Amino acid sequence: MKNSVSKKITIIGSGYVGLTSGICFAEIGHNVICIDSDKSKIEKLKSGKIPIYEPGLDELMKKNRDRLEFSTDLIYGIKESEIIFIAVGTPSNADGSADLSYVETVARSVAINMQEYKLIVEKSTVPVQTAEWIRVTINRYKGKDIEFDVASNPEFLREGSAVKDFLFPDRIVIGVESEKAKKLMLCLYEPINAEKVIVDTKSAELIKHASNSFLAMKISFINAVANICEKTGADIEKVALGMGLDKRIGKDFLNAGVGYGGSCFPKDVRAFIWISQQLGYDFNLLKEVEKINLKQREIFIKKIEESLWILKDKNIGILGLSFKPDTDDIRDAPAIDIIKNLKEKGAKIKVYDPKAMDNIKKIFADIEYCDGLDSVAKNSDCLIFLTEWEEFKHIDFDKIKKLMSQPIIIDGRNIFDLEKMKKLGFVYKSVGRG
Ligand code: UGA
Image (cartoon, rainbow, N blue to C red; front, side, top):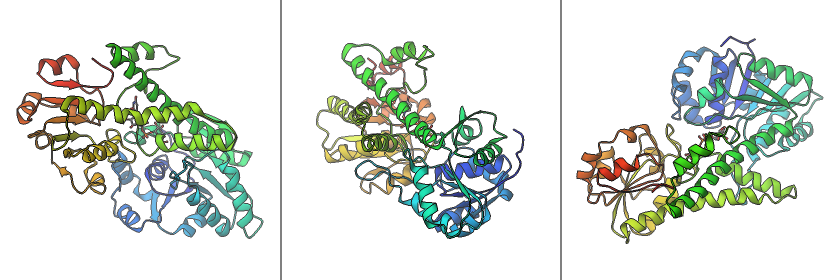
């Protein structure tokens, strides 16, 4: 990867997207100021520690330390750089809409504090027409007649492979309304060898919502088919393979399981439904995507009940808590709903996750936290798998079986081979197979 013409960039919001983008922009030669209002997060970053678990990010930060600055001073960040990325959170409101209050606050601060031309870039996932609102807000609050542009540059990185996704993306989407903004954006991404899709800001915003919703739809679709497989004795993995080899369908995102979670799909599907409604279109297809996804958690609980009958006082061991492997993120993770439900039914719960234990402790005080597989398995009436962590793929099942009270395994991620589990003598249930 070649180095770019070095630019000075400020990234406002140092969460997953902001921080990864900031560190990766430093990697391709830019000087980056990462801003966050959370003092302890910035202190951590200043002392060289990454506040999230993301493979490879640590090393990249160390390597590019001299091109990275961390600060809580928003005004300083605005004054120092020509290009300002907004990467603040856009959480869900109760009605499903995206809460854009942080975006608005940043837009106002930029307006009040800018002294010369600025390019303001949306990185956060926002509903269509947000760039227009940012433009209106800046025009309203800017003191002097200063030129500015607003661009949309949605991010497609996945937690767990964020660095690779940023540096080697399938495409880079750039939404701009002026030649100047287009030139600056192309200059920023010049070192990255990927197709650049240059569109207007509204189309760029829609590309992000539509992409995430489409991927969520693929998952719900395959989960719906998995339910039909269970009723007929067909095998979802074989069905997904046969479908996915058709290039028009593609084999990715056809893994059936307990459904999607995380900070993006659930929130973005809800926000896309909401904004469509506002625009006068009832996006029923996406409502169904969401419904199927939540239903997967209920169906999974039913499978546990069908195996254990009464859950009260049963010892249930849960392996995997994060919404997917290689992250400590538990936002909207199926594990949260499933633990709540099992607790309500009186089950005694033990859990283990390689990275997400500290986060889940903030939600559940009265479950047992274990230091590894063996302690979860010990005296369990049933083991359930909710995340396909690599270390779970190498379990010594003979040993686990001896530790358990009953050899019952319910696998929400189809991690293990059906025949092998049968041979080992387990009652083994998974999703859409057997
Ligand atoms: C998702 C998108 O994949 C990224 O492109 C996007 O940038 C990001 O949201 C975002 O908007 O910031 P992420 O939430 O990190 O990324 O995770 P994914 O790898 O997409 O997985 C999401 C969920 O879907 C996980 O719970 C995963 O277990 C589930 N999933 C995924 C399935 O159940 N089946 C599959 O086949 C694939």
